[in-house]
Length: 497
Image (cartoon, rainbow, N blue to C red; front, side, top):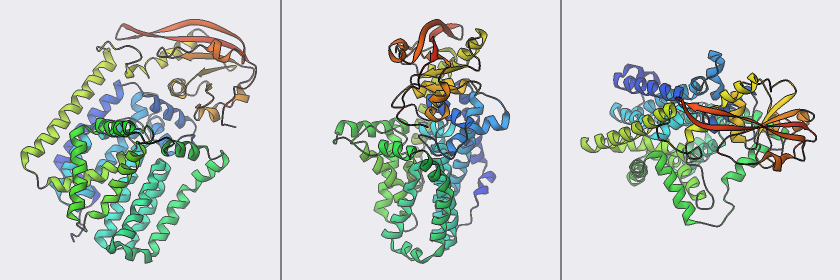
């Protein structure tokens, strides 16, 4: 067995690694400046206005990720919103490099950085845009590093780091429970790991993780277990098996990874199974469980493409070792093809975000989801339509997130949606809005009628002049507005205070 002599700080002595990190950092900064916040990103930005131990849909660390740049700079911008995500990705890359270099060698570690900086999901999704997986990736890899240390040193004391990593991972995303399942698999299935059942550090590590996660449990207990109920409802299949949904779940994973990369990573897992090397086989459950479980769930209901992605972090580690036996042309083709495709896609998105050259309709142009919301707030203030007795509202939490982030917490924002108001049900309790005027803001991709939906709740609903939005001097869309006078009674929500 190879002795571990590589520090996580050794990456800063590796010029090639630093070059990859530096170029990636600059590219993600540029993309973060020019691409408007996505619907989930803006929502997480609103979460950062209201720090708590939990939210309707996630544990708390995503709010820290979204708020870090604003807290450090004092500015409201797409870059400050995404700064935490960019920083966390660098930490993930450093951890990945250290793990792979300890398990294999420097060449394999460089491969791991190239994978992270060329695969679309990791480089852009986890690497620049705000999602719970920004932090989950860090602590997922830190947990793997701690397990690697146990394996290489034969010292159970590293379970203490495992416990801390698991605690933070669970506070990042509930998917982290699969870390516990993965190490449990190792302790049961692999003979060389069974002796750690006798290690007191295993149980102390579990206690540490439990104590760290306890505040979120208590928060959920005070909020009718809303977060667990919501996530469990999403993650458990409730329908009959559908091969169409299964294939869709596979295809969206392939889209996030690029099809040939997905095949290569799956092959890396298979090669490890076939080799059955004690030095690497302990990594298998960290790859197979997330990928396998969520892919199978996708046979009964639609899954989000990023759900299985933590498993591909372990798959990258395993694949980098396998690639050491590849010929140079195959290695070059893999990284050049992936890098070029990702670069082209990113360049197109950034340029289109700036000038809108693709001429897409509002409903098809995803870059317009977060565009113009700040201009809406400015225009409403210029019209003197906003004061302490006025609130803003939408009919979907996704547009509520964009609207809420644009207000910079200056005005209350509500979501009048019985089934899915998300955390707006707690941020803007309906009882606090009764007697106030509301301004309904509708993104132009929607066509709902507030007169039909909300007439019984307000004394009067009056259409207002819309707000026209231009990009690079070109007209793009019009936000529609209604003044809804005097909320007579609380709008009924399925949850909330």
